[in-house]
Length: 206
Image (cartoon, rainbow, N blue to C red; front, top):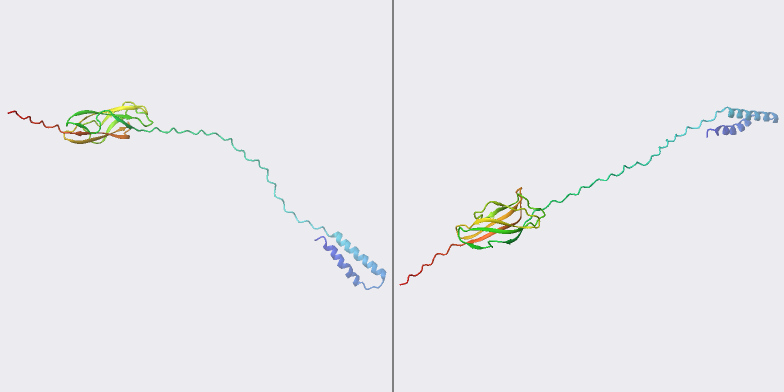
């Protein structure tokens, strides 16, 4: 826009100068007109060209980025936990002294249970068959259990004594680990203590 204003100035200046010439002679008017044009051209030649406004510098181009290199995956070994074995015991049979066996007071007897190792752990040294509750009937607090593999059976025996008073007596027994953990079915021995019949007097013949 700044380069055009001298041309516009000349466009309006030339007619104005022509209007101010008072001499009617054609030669003088021509000379005056040529002088005005020359002055305008001289002014145009002396006007320095307008400097172009500095352009907005473009931002530097971002350096090309290469995709991040992923580290090679490392296979992590997953430890497989071995499930712990379980303790269990199941009743199989009464080998001696079936339930409600009648015994005289003070009678010694041996109770034998057949027991199955129904868990997944073997019974090794240190496992015991322990009195749990009820009537102990003179028996020990515990007896040792032979080594028994899982799934096998074992006969467990306890020496007991029938109480002196007549009645029904029941004692409960259970398996126990070396650390004192009791497990499996509680098994029992139940007896009937009966008094010995009094002798019947034999009538004397007369």
